Image: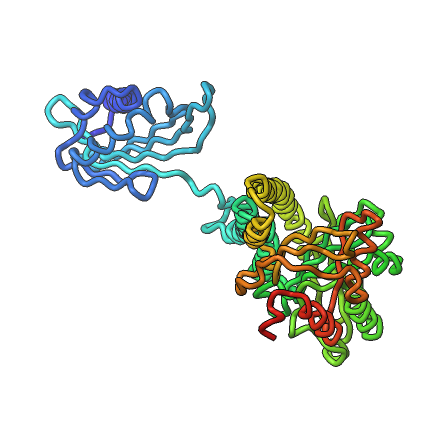
Length: 484
């Protein structure tokens, strides 16, 4: 085919119509320009089509992305005859619409193999591509640009990796805090607070931090109340009450407690650590002692102690490290501060439970008193006082008090003796009325003197030989004297 101006114009107009119908979404007309065995290699990886039906399926799927959102401008057409075919090259600029504004997207190259069949031009094969934007003039490959882009990409990946690691770490910490909060909310009784101290240490360790002993300490006006884990952290090893001067005599700790600083790191060499532990043992009122508590030799072996503490609304939480660690990792301290915040929730729950337990206990005591009053008011004769004593014993027992015996002593100043009605769950003979002189021994004499002074409460602690001697005297007057 000889290429004439008329044919060039005809081909140029055909191409314009071809692309206009495509970008307008007039698929019925556009598909009439394609042969059944049409082939196309597009601009991205998935765009390879081997038939008219394949290109139509794809076009219908992406039609909403194309219509009104893409156009080619500044187009230059090259026409090359390959009898009986024509090859066309269209070079132009692709624009896309973003937020109602047309924006340059890329230079585009479109190659089409067309043929006139009867009176209609048909497209047999097409290929589209975007020029390599990285290559410079005179370059076959954009090696330097790719290297620079790879470096940039590596930096971006490294930054993103660090961001993801940081985010993951934050999630790990928050999950640990949430477990502490959940346990705090689930507390059923005030003593459950001790379990949360153990949980805090376990969560701290699971996050990758080092901690030996872990504790919670309330700062009360005159004393500290401290609960500390065992050395292995599996349970509470120590529960103690300490005088405030144990820290008041340490300037760094005394200053910190008066300040608003959230944390403090207190290091002790071997001698200082031994002295501190000895004072704690000597001055502390221990409710529980860990049998695996560190000895002097243990402290010498580890080279001293370091305490890291974080302030709470009511005192502190903290943990110990072996040796002298002047600068613990910042993240360790930051997480301890977060744990302190979570523990405040547990402590508030502790106070609420204490209040509730106190109210419940007061109600329980009042009910017990009412039962004792009712039994006393129901008496018809004095001998029934022993039965009232038995009620008193039972109510004491229900309240968690386990006396050897209990009952009533009524003074008879004329005879200088007590009339006694007592009860013992294990001895029925103990319930009989009997008398006991005011001055049978020095302990009974002291009891009588306190009664004369109208003291509301009297107690005597008897141990060992003194306890035996006292009960020998009691046995001379008690109902069981006939059996002994």
